[in-house]
Amino acid sequence: MLKILVCVSGGGTNLQAIIDGIAGGTITNTEIMAVISNNPGAFALERAKKAGIEGICISPKDFSDRAAFNEAFLKKVDELAPDLIVLAGFLVNIPKEMVEHYPNRIINIHPSLIPSFCGTGYYGLKVHEAALARGVKVSGATVHFVDAGTDTGPIIMQKAVEVMPGDTPKELQKRIMEQAEWVILPAAIDAIANGRL
Image (cartoon, rainbow, N blue to C red):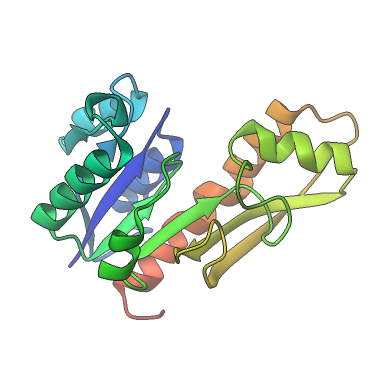
């Protein structure tokens, strides 16, 4: 049984896709041991509670500096000792020590086809705004392993999504979530849980 820790900052739609995948059997041999958010107001924590999953908030605002936050965050993760850490819309830079401590055991979902529209500053709607400004005809999502860089780790899965004429960033974001993110993140977790990756 793969024990996963899901880290989220906002609404938790990808968390919900994982919860639904486990409940519906598209993700097998997996359980969510806890959800960590850096944002006390994250709706993701409500989703966790509703699903009977432990929700934990560790906010950088509660610490004197980033180093203190990183230490507390890493300590909590080590206490939980997950098999896999899933970053599902987690807007916090993962401390280098954590990447070193959990090599190839942290995955992230990014709302573009890496290497396009990724790296520092590309998150949330900013990704889709940049894609539309560039005039791309296809965007999508990528699940990748996390390394010391930003969105630079080995790619696990990608799924392309068509950009429609007249798309707004919000419309494109919604289509990419529904057609790509909620499909490939559960698929990647299932592949890892069942030794296919």
